[in-house]
Image (cartoon, rainbow, N blue to C red; front, side):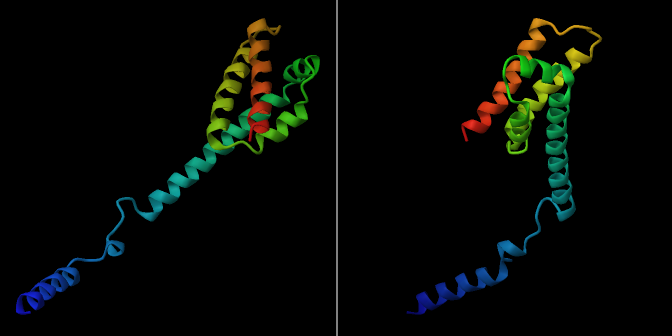
Amino acid sequence: MRSTCALVAVVLSILIAVPPVSAQEHVAGQQVLDAAVQQHVRAIDQNREAVQQFLQRSDVRAIAGKYGIDIRRAESAVATMNAADLASIAARARQADDALAGGASTVTISTTAIIIGLLVLILLIVALR
């Protein structure tokens, strides 16, 4: 009985001496966490804007119309995409936009294929949710 009381006393002493886990400081402070969240939100907004600007191009709209792709549906789909899908689509949109803005006066077959692929990919991502 005496050893049990001693054991309980030792365990209680250790529990009282060790600070609770919730009282320990986080490795990253609140300001760092807030800055990371703001940076993530800015990146999502920039990606969404890049895709929207790409879809606003007259040559992209012309190609979409030529192949019967509803550009309004693609534009509304961009608003519902998650961050990972949006980042992937935005990277491709920037690549295609750079190719179109690179001084070429005509749209090449590869750029047309990229545009069509992007539009179809946007619609597929939303349709498969």
